[in-house]
Amino acid sequence: MMKCLLLLFGVIAACAASTLRDPVQGYKEGDRYFYFPGDGDNTMHLVDAEEPADLAFIDEYTRNPANNKYWLFTRSNPTSAQVLVHGNAASVTNSNINFSRITVFLAHGWNGHGGNTMNRMLIEAFLQNADVNVIVLDWSELANRSYTTAKGGTAEVGRGLGQFINWLAGRGLLYNRVHLVGFSLGGHLVGNAGRETGSRVHRITALDPAGPLWNSDRNRITRTDGRYVEVIHTETTALGYSGLCGDADFYPNGGSNMPGCIVGAINCSHSRSYEYMASSVKHNHFLAHVCGSLSDANRNRCTGTPLNPMGNSDINKSRAGIFRVNTGRNYPF
Image 1 (cartoon, rainbow, N blue to C red):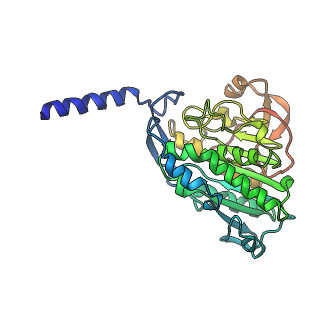
Image 2: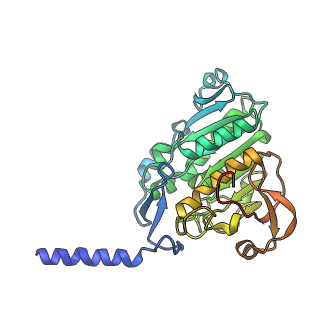
Image 3: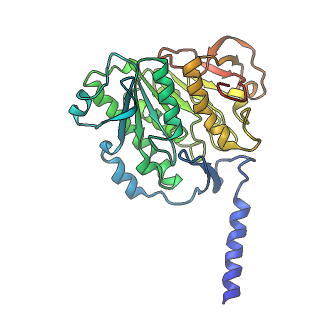
């Protein structure tokens, strides 16, 4: 009996190993097993694409958009958040929010939280650059479930964010002063938020939006989700969405193997997207060449002008196309 059990487990393990793609070799749609990093610790986690999403929990969490947490940071409170509550007008009127300013919304990804590295870097960068409102969306209660569950709830959380923006608009927020920024799963989340507002938000920036299980998902980010949608692709082999999906698609260094990352450290390249964004908000120095095709971007054959800045905080960006910029190895790159 014991030999039979051991043999059975051995067969299962062998089957799993045979379908598990080396993360360095890349992910392709249809793979059952793949590795994906968590936003909170940047650790690579093994994901089973066939693990059922917890639909009951997704419904319980997303049925009330007030389950999302919103943390406001301004130059008057750059490190200590003020909590805004959807439906609670007093939480807004008693805060430091100023609707005459640009409002930047930040959304983390899988296994992330409102206080993670991505959010801290971008809060500091945006507030140093200009007197703006920064609102961090913390959806960690759902995002820290399995990948399939977090992915399954991403669009609905985004719609909840869009409803919150619409609610704020009824209290003075101007859609043309809104900039949505999301990383990984958060990249698709902010696309759905923009869609919920009727695509009235002025700018959306998706930072290496997640690739696995999104190829045929109609809820993935698209260029029609806002007035201007920018996508920065930094890990197109396994973790990030590789195809064109914005008005402007930037492929720094070709879209994979970012300088300064150890060869094969795909989680490092993935996180470079928000590091580049933070640096660009402060310095606005990533002037990218226009590319004739995605192949040209991948192969460093982009020499077209005029140049287009990647990232930055300009709410009125408008130039569309495919772009490449070559960066340095270390901050500010």
